Length: 91
Image 1: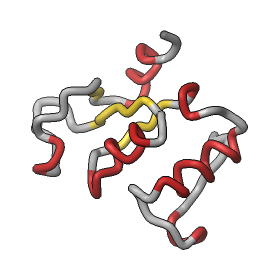
Image 2: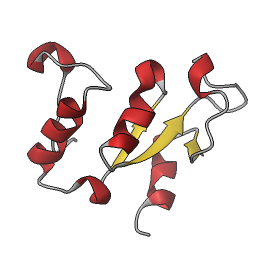
Image 3: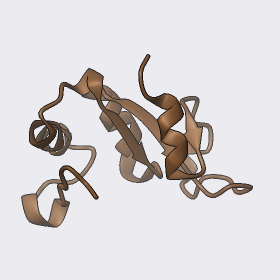
């Protein structure tokens, strides 16, 4: 179901280390500006994705605030279900 999977336990890197994002981008063969990172915002992962040039989208449960204090005031796009990421493709 996935074109690439990069696991921190396998590559010895953790978000927001820019190298882990670049590994995923390299495996997909895309530039950062062509990619969207979707995450729950833990460990500065959304800002880390933006720092390497990716678009970042916060995902959290519908009707609930995000789990992590650091992203409760996230000003970027938000979704509550993975299929909603499709509305962020393109542009």
